[in-house]
Amino acid sequence: MQPIQPETYGAPRTLPVPAQRSAAPAEGFAVVDVETTGLGRSDRVISAGVYQLDPDGEITDHWYTLVNPERDPGPVWIHGLTAELLATAPTFPQIADELADRLRGRVLVAHNALFDWNMISREFSRAGLRAPVEQRLCTMVLSRDLRLPLPNGKLASLAAHFGVQQRHAHNALDDARVLAEAFRPSLHLARLGGIPLPLQNCVAVADLGEDEPAVPARASWTGANYRQARKRPPCPYPNPGRWEDGKPLVQGMRVAFTGDTSTDRELLEDRAVEAGLHIATSVSRLTSLLVTNEPDSWSGKARKAREVGTPVVTEDAFLQLLREVAPHPGA
Image (cartoon, rainbow, N blue to C red):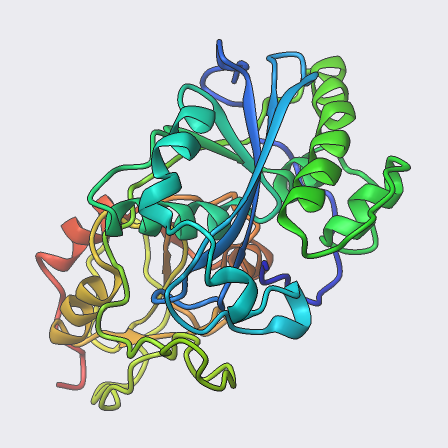
């Protein structure tokens, strides 16, 4: 289950000139889909499908497993996996080695890849392991870079564009198959057009959502276990406007975050609040700064930042800026 924003797919963007052309890894690609108990940090993987592709995008193998989350399975009406069905399935630690073997040395490919990576990375972390993935590729971003005439970013739209039949939506194996069959022509189009693959480095997720209450097995699921933004006291300073390159942050600036961070997200937010900054949960023309390690990602915040011209900095640059935040002019 993947969170897809019900928005228009977006206009083609001007492609940046990469410092180095991306290339297929020696082992090829691992096209992945996971179904989960929900979308929050404490949610769990309940099934996983992997299609292995060679560097040219040809399918060489596939694999599927159910996973016992040892808790309520979440929205059964979406994925169809009941607590009774999952009760006899292996737990994630029991399938971790086999999944790792199918991912190792390959680029992880997924539709909305940040979500699948975060869920998989957290499961490996809970098992005391690290997912053996160095790079990922989001087919939503690749579709945009190819300027495919899609009405939205949904997997079904990508499948329809390439004539791939989707037999069982929200089944991890079938969704992985559909994506593998749609990724192959996408890969060929990128190579023909000289378009670099939008590879992103994978940062291991350490934030396991342990501060969130787990939903016990067979409990009623209402979606309340989705991560909610922590309620913070209002920022005492009015917004002084956008951050300008070469200048310090100023108390009251509205700062938004999106994507992977090597520092725990809530720790970053806590440090920003302590410095007198306002944590923005969305991006608008009033946002002073967006912090992301993936400025070209398909996230709603990154897209909005590009649209309205919000300044963007990396996590490392933001941590440097936090060392000296200027007092608010009215303070």
